[in-house]
Length: 380
Image 1 (cartoon, one colour):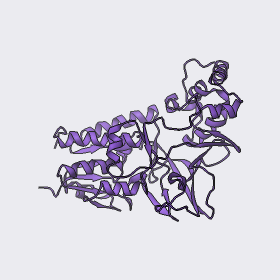
Image 2: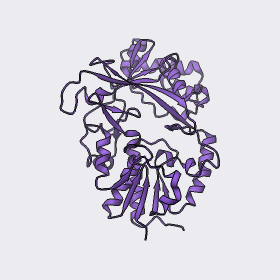
Image 3: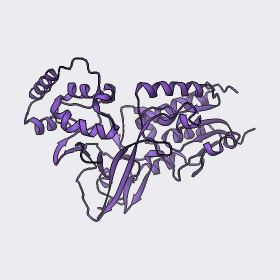
């Protein structure tokens, strides 16, 4: 008899959700993570009494009552609304694209005026069926906004020319002909008071976990401990890159403490020109309205500049590069994964898929439900 029913590799949202469900079903669970902290990429830490999102801004947003009720079991959420600002060579624009943006760009005051300009610019560009990100963006917001607020930012983010990127990347781009600068059109939105680390700690309460523990370095030893494995690491790394490495974009964070109470007046400012080397600056204190845990004003501030970079093995992967080549390579890895009958592959790295946080949690809940009901058949 194995020591554990489930070995869960990764203490991020997927792993923590699955672990919680398994533990609640009276299963013996061990969670391990190669990092020195829980929470995965939603990990937050306190610096100068500011809750800092170490791996970039994470704002929980969802239309799913099921996901919202689930996370509220483990944290109290504040009322933070994501309303980023775009900085193009010193010109400031409201995001997402809305009537404030159109007014600043063209001086228009009505939706019909804005729509007319976008339609005219789309017709002048001769776009009928968008085949690239560039054409898709122009068809949605016109050439002026594309040139100032999309082109440079996207090139920095993906490291590729916009006419070489697929159109679907930007199909979810919010465009509103109202004065609504709430980026997420979601019923529920906010950030856990005190940060995500506390939330994940509550999810793992009573569950054994080990940090700074590399599963792939001692794979056979760890597999012998449990009947089943839930693996949330990179799928290609699991198979030792035997088919080649999947491509990702990575991010480098330059975090700095400043002796001022207010650096930029907003949680997120995107730098959309191509000359500025970073994509955005996050000022973390505004995720909690400039207050510490006691509700007091914080005299200092912490900012993070984000630099999008090409990924290589050994660097933290963030965004999968969803082109045809990588989709085909992932399908071959998935075929190998399907033969690993006692292993569940999950999460953004295990499934090579960009996941919003609510979708990660819902996917883990569904997979755990199947596994715990016995629908997941182990093929030895």
